[in-house]
Length: 154
Image (cartoon, rainbow, N blue to C red; front, side, top):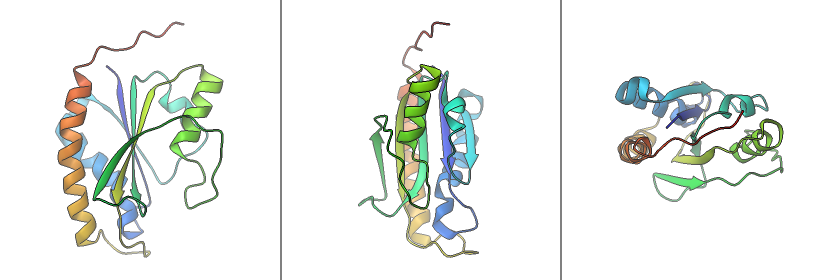
């Protein structure tokens, strides 16, 4: 089972650092059992980066999640949003499907963020959200690692 954990966000903008912070914590936990990627934001080239994986988990700070964290299975979408992150994980999955003819199972792990000011560290509330998401991810990824790998044809 090949799993990629992809955290994105700006570490210089307060709680926007939640995605990369989660990757760092899980990297210390799972070491070489997963692959890891961190970026300030997603790009169209990430379609190449997710190809060949069975499962991809995109971790990012969110203003829209009601609880401290939430996991959502993604469906590919050709819609490009014009927001802080112009490229969404669903759009990256769409590009991977279209140009790489691959369809990894993709999830968005949203972590509740509260402050986004430049130069600020993680807020105390976001640190609590990070801890909850970390404990959840350990359990969920542990279950994913026991699943059989997909067979890719070449």
